Image 1 (cartoon, rainbow, N blue to C red):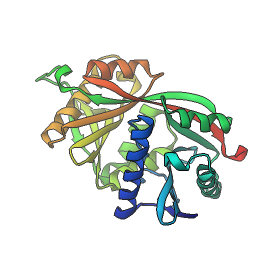
Image 2: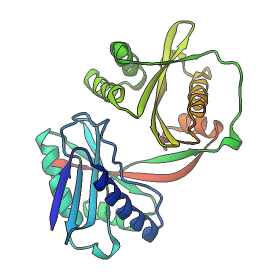
Image 3: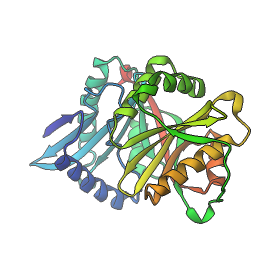
Length: 288
């Protein structure tokens, strides 16, 4: 058994992971994927992807998404015929070693709702259910077009960093360091863009996208508290959708916490449909 650790996967490793993922998805009838984009991890040097090989064949993968120092989200796949042999445990031990180096206290295990093996692992680890997140896909036939907008959309650059940190803290109630890390990583990424929503020369919101081929993920969407409840969130989302269409993106996705009822209803009314439900199970690093 050989375990390789990466802070960023090379093309060969990505192809191996995608092939393993496809086998597992077909066997377990799943749609979700492991998160391989490390560009938003708060520390770019941290090893966040672990690959386990037997006889040069990729058997198991564990990936961590770590946007802040507060917690790491872990997703994993193991080939069906190699399960219950301790491979996930071996990968988890390596991941925990890395988390302890940076004093990361919590883990959220990500499990697709219908994954029997994933729920079994969470039960074995005595991880507590935390929340459910929906992955939603855009259905163009349900979209309501509009010609007039009160808001305008502005593309941002590194010179806007302080402005972006301030507005992010207001919208998401995050601390300065967490906001700074997420925004810097977004601005440095080759596939991500961050927009500001402007109303009569006043910045009242923000939103981000991540592009991959014909697909784009919308994330980090929000309006400052004093301007909520006035339809600006829907306008901001529609402006971003229109921008993505102009860029040739035909498949649009976004994620939303199931407890965020207002956002969920907004996305449904804007043409998004739930495609996959992911359950999150929490465990302290110190208890593993």
